[in-house]
Length: 388
Image 1: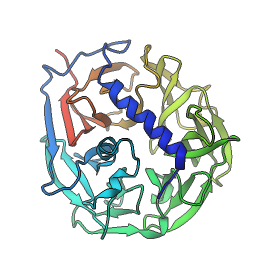
Image 2: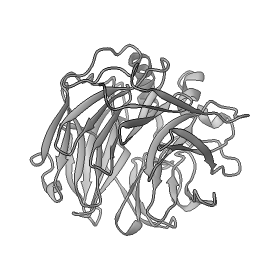
Image 3: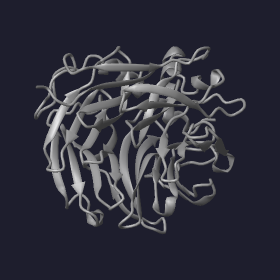
Image 4: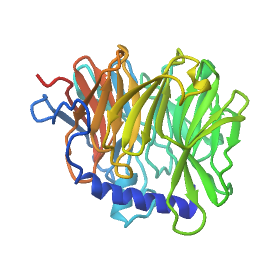
């Protein structure tokens, strides 16, 4: 399967260059920096699977109570090992695993095996659902769910391939970003039931000369709207990849299309509070929307500066997570992590650079501790959020 053709290969080539640049990033972002993790009670846990033919790493995470679930995928390591081939992960068979980190004791629990017969793709995104299941995508293959209590799991063959990230919608439904699919010019937003039945699929048309590849989604429960963040892939020539955000109303009609500032990640809480990580030039901000502010998201809400010297093109806000006490955690590939209090006070922490290739994906806080998934082996690193 080639979900997005030549455009995706160009994007992945740029991402490969990013990996080399990240190791050289130095200096703390602007604002209140909390220093490195050298004296912060650093704990590093690696999930090692004996007999695995490939070297999987930790991807997107989702928190359920005191457990952080995360996908394990060999995409990046296979990509590098085979000179930038985006389908290199498909050269070897499974297993397909969802890692688990016990946040209370900072130890790894036995991974959940969701391997399908003949499986080759790793697990990409995971979503802890109110029904107790953990839903997951594998991108090149089918999505599904697993019950952590019984380890029973099921695959949704009818959803098809190409699903990347997931978000919870109203009534326990799920929305997914279909980055691409064979035979389709553009990607789509898919809404499906907790049992895997497709409720709607909305293709996203792009500007002339570009294909739309939706990469992440969020659902605003107050306005019943779906937010989609995209890669706009050039169909011809060596043009740069651009991005936009689309807001779809409850019927799937596009209400807003936002190109500037770039929205790198968006998340909505059950009460309708929204969080947007935005980049405008060298300025990284967290925009906090009160329930209902999605009507005019860039004109309303509170703006919290995170970094005045953000290295555009060489770093990315990969995830936003909200703790039970209201703290927001913005995780960047480079390991710079911003924690914003409910009062709007931002603190910047640095996670360790454990090697020259790894990327951070999802960070969560529990009390005085921060834990984040690290894509270099299936790794979770934890440190104190204090510096005194």
